Length: 409
Ligand code: ADP
Ligand code: ASP
Ligand code: MG
Image 1 (cartoon, rainbow, N blue to C red):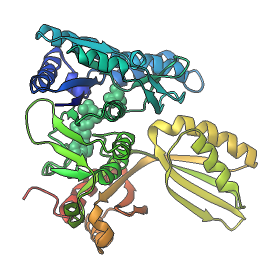
Image 2 (image 1 turned 90 degrees about the vertical axis):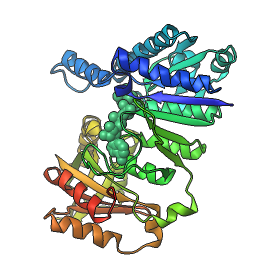
Image 3 (image 1 turned 45 degrees about the horizontal axis):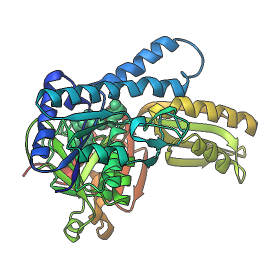
Image 4 (image 1 turned 30 degrees about the vertical axis):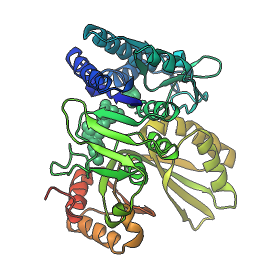
């Protein structure tokens, strides 16, 4: 039997008792004959608490705390968990050794807070596995070539899991979390959401990018690229879970496989920018250089020869965005920026949409019946998304979920 990589998210290692329960899952895989590598997140809400602490210390100073120091701080969360899970395994009578990202040579670029993995040295891990040890790795973190600590973006332990799975050529990556697998909608919002047996990389990527935060979008993208299957399972009990794999013929018959809600969206409207060739290109190029993902772009031409350009970004990117946008508007000689955080996006996703018609009509109809106003629509080959008011968010998700009969039979 080959290597298996298991990841335990924050809630699955939130207490000493849960750490022991996670350790039991690890031991079971070892006893089944696998070589086991374990990736862990920070305990419970540690990452959020560390961010709050940094904000307190930073106080009313202008701008943001230095990003290098933010990463230095946030990476400590995962470092606590690796030691504790190694201890729990030792207490249960199994040899384990823990490593930080830096210790296993997980090299990233220098984009602090959203670093991308560039290289990962397997020597140390394989060496310890060959000695019969369980290897524990801190998720969410790496180091730059010059040794600075970096983090991989929120939910980044998923990326660590998949990267390890890919370089170690693992049989499977097991993502242990606090729900039974991937559901047709967030089961915390839609109680009758149904557990999905298997879902394609593309659908999961779309769902993650529009709000299914159970997996980080980038991690799924990586899993697809290297063809690493991800098995999403509950860390607290056994069950079939969900397999995320390459698309199969059978999947094509499912028109809509799931829906999702994104509530951490801010719409930015740049008012009265010059309506000339190259202006939009300049704006989006500085935003892109700041590593900020934009969506839902709309441009309206005004009568005075200017234009209003609006787009959405995640709340977490607004502080960085303000800096680049203000600078660019000054260079362009005018315009102003307005930020609206009272938005949400509801989406439906399914590979079968490629061959099917009427999906949009059904979705818009469901929203209309609930008197939810659609502010903007965007689509991909396998997704339809509507921007709506945040106040309507959960009502809209439930309505769409019901309209496509996604609930339990
Ligand atoms: P972890 O700490 O294990 O990384 P997360 O909190 O990041 O866990 O992700 C798990 C959560 O994702 C679930 O508790 C659930 O509320 C949410 N979620 C959102 N959409 C879905 C979905 N379609 N299927 C399953 N969980 C979902
Ligand atoms: N602890 C980090 C976060 O909360 C990484 C992770 O959980 O995947 O985002
Ligand atoms: Mg997570």
